[in-house]
Image 1 (cartoon, rainbow, N blue to C red):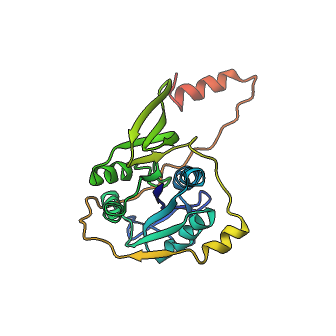
Image 2: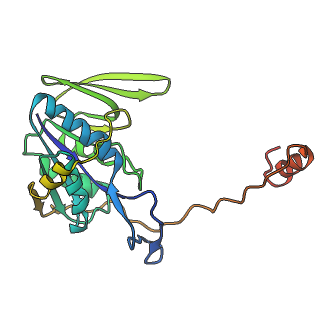
Length: 246
């Protein structure tokens, strides 16, 4: 089985978020990046499990600059066979999807897998766009994936239950919690990752469809007020006059 896994970077959840250029650009100064967890924990690890069982290769693809290579090397350390970096800044979902599709279209991949979304933008757009551009079936937010021959059986969590679908390969699938368990790269994997192939490919000409007009921080949380248990009157007054919920 030949699988392509899309890998992107995301700020570590402990990073202090700030914006630059009149709030039109994310300020990357001092930010520690990680592999987007949905890409790493679920898409990449499940792809590795499938090839470990049935044979095959796992190639990662990242649309990004040389600054993205540490997270690409981490994916290689976890077990990916090789990696591709499309040498462009990822600023627009359609641009990213077009780059992935342009690379994948003539490589004969059985599946293109990616996380359901990135934890910083939460757009969940790229997977569907890749499938459309490649004219392949698409299953989103999958929590379980099994493959037998040329048929994939996929489970997706839905309101109040689970949906089970079948699709023929090749296909595109976005992965969510439940697909696999996180793997920690061991020392052997880290050492091997240093010499695994990482191809740098120029981007294809694609017009971006969106531009960021402005970023803004969410409103600061108000201070917590502690009311003594025997002072129900004060609690009722605050709920009525300040919170205005009664």
